[in-house]
Image (cartoon, rainbow over all chains, first blue to last red):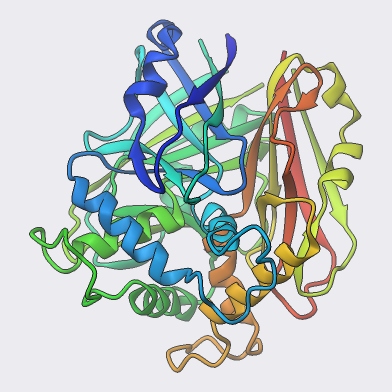
Length: 139
Length: 139
Length: 139
């Protein structure tokens, strides 16, 4: 069984946002998969996806603080600056975190840990709407 | 062909640990796959999986040194601190390295490079037992 | 449908190199896949793969600058130094960026964003030829 679907995400402010519910609701066919894998892919180079703690908003706040410190907008070595100071750091953060997640599916549900949630990592100040491609396979 | 199995890992100290043998031994069905993919997923947000050099313990030691320096416990910007100073850095390291690996399978074996080994990256001081979900597909 | 093929890449200098065209040309069977996934895996621990901006060479230049600054060759904590000063940083960069990409395939083409290109991330000064394993599945 193969299923592929685009999921359009509304614009979000720069930061880390939980989207697990939105992704699962877009894929009601998950309930029919006994054993499988769900691939979620973001079609952009200045936003990314990661899996992390889904309970405390302060964890997501600290993700912001860490990545803004580790990939500074004012680093002296940036040469690709004409799209704004948030652009090149966004590209780096996107590659550090990655453009996709592959999640196990078991008995009709994501077989992830209790505390694991899908984060949309919006690295631009005004990234606009983002497009995901979800690919579900299994039996 | 689809196969999915939980692998329980004994508690390990904070650090980087080779678990290739443990994963392969838990999946004797690998030997029956001509062409396929093995997905290994960790169901936690303070430990991660990566693939790296499998011969020199000093490489794994240097992973420790780098990540402890790059994601310091005493950074002034942490707000999520009530679970201990190792908790928030563990979440960040987990996302930098990622929760899963997808490995090619060819003629009954992992088609990885000679020097590539699976690391369990334990980012907590006392992370306890960790749970993996292995999903094997192929023909 | 399953297909697996090795792709040998010519030696490249240290840095970030676009290889989307080379990967796609090695897989003419992509055109027959209506819905599927392409896994591209690098069989080395001192080079990696990522997906990022495919238009501006200065973006790839800035990747170099960032990663050389974030993972310095002269860090005081390296102990694995006998393979040269570029070796241990190469291992770290390889794990930060990751050894594989999983890309959605739709109607015979990679369903990636307009600006997303596959980067070979060569972290060694003289890494030599690199070997990829491409695994294509779908229907």
